[in-house]
Length: 244
Image (cartoon, rainbow, N blue to C red; front, side, top):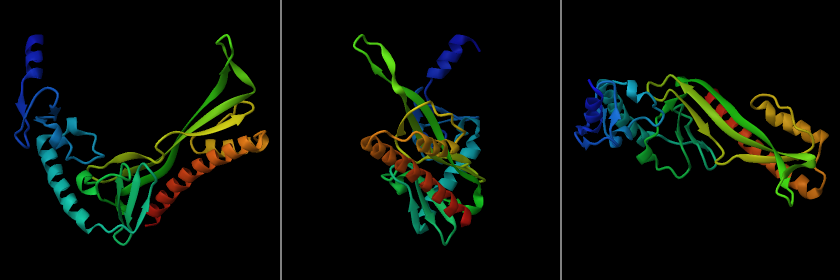
């Protein structure tokens, strides 16, 4: 097949193999042996990531499962919920299962979250990303220079990572805080450890280099409280599912 033929094929309108809707180049979602429209793709599991390597038969089976999942949500009885503005973990403790919503305003019926059994969870853990940057001030000539002592801004994002044996919802990183949590310090650059150790490192750092004023102390205490709020939330989510 020549280049012109490939271009022509790319722009050729085709029908969705599931609903029969005619789709152009922008709405064409490829499968291993066919194409589907974006509306049908939206019906797949929110955690599913292997569409392009799936066959029409495999996707057809998943769509059937998704309709069954929608019906089972009617008998899902929440007994406890975890989450702030981002990922919402809703747990049905007597039936040992849970669902995850991307945020608290999500319509459950429309989103159709996968019902995941506790027994399907192969790993669940609290995780965190961390970044530290030096803050500088601008002089009258426009040059940016360091404070004395130096000041640093530490940014934290918290996640609960879930890996399962579920046939379609294999793994997902569930974000807990909507924006990066900032902690500001003054003093030398902090040498951090990996992952959650960084938060404890920062707490110990503040013991050696405490804020110099009451206002700075109040700000840092609030910033650290915000970080521990999400760290504790993630820990509670993991424990609730593991002990179930």
